[in-house]
Length: 477
Image (cartoon, rainbow, N blue to C red; front, top):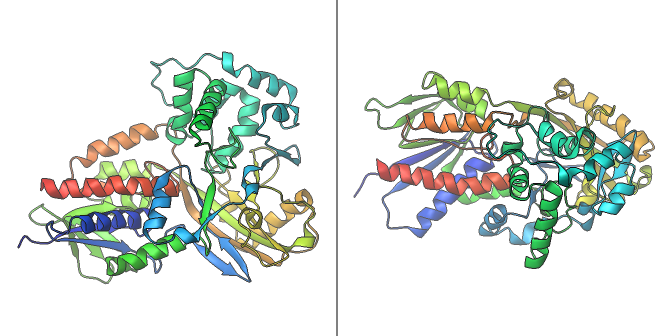
């Protein structure tokens, strides 16, 4: 009987768990293959990483992501494979209505072109420049430098529209600095549309026409207002996904086991993982599905080039504030997804989602739940404030804007010091350098959301790719 081989995954967030599940499914389909052991090592007591759902006084608070878009099948397929199909919870129709904070008030980000132009969201000069977009020359095909999100948007739709429209949109995804984020890494589809159609407006019209013809258009998502698709969560909260993965994987997932150091085995054929308070563990294939900075620390002394490249991936801090009110306390109808704010508008909030409107069961009867985001790459000091201070500041910022009377019945905050990887200019080259350097280390694979997409969909989709890479590496040894 051939010896058992072992794949060890460091990190029990959604990426690591999804890779383990993909390997588990593959082995189930090929029960006659050589013996394989899969182990997931998670340093914390619970799985899921940044995904964290909590019931507080009858409110369901999502302290990490609050859903995923249904435009891609990977996460939906994963949920259904786990038996969570009946727990899927699409956002209400209000998901399609978005607001943008500008000049002291909320403006509807209207999807219809005429309604948008009639709104006060953009000044006249900004509207005129936006209308010129179809006649702006596309970037030369031979251009190879990595363009920032801000530079791309200003070139296509003008600096005013870039600040008012694109800045808030990227904040809702990356909480980043658009002058530093790489448009090719963060929004590759937008770059592709410009190359294909020579204009974003012409391209979006063509894409919408094709979706309508195929009957696959996004439901409830305003064209141009952000990524397409309909927001979807799980009825008890998004944490049900990693919890169910860990439960179904059983003993594969070992919690509270923190890896402190890596080394090669004496014969150079395997990896040795030194854990706090545990005996060393060997791995034929090692998958680092932890954050980039954690992977860098583990690779210190193994490969300084890999460690340095990983440390160059910045993370934006983010504080999530949950504010609950009695419905009569809030005069605003809360008739939409929520709002985002551009930098420089005098509001120290990246935005606020109206969670109890998006998902109707997030607050007790006759109450509402708001979820405010503070911090980001351009306001790192905010996320360093104590949680009670953050909750008070968010309430004071929202009070005049939404017509709030009295104090919140719920005011909690959770701070993520390193929340969202930043795909800054140069990210593509850095990922290519990492891939090249990894060829020097057979049996070592990097996973997680620091490389190929920050969202849950990205993690679920990439998990299958990583699983295949791991099996291919085993087969080549």
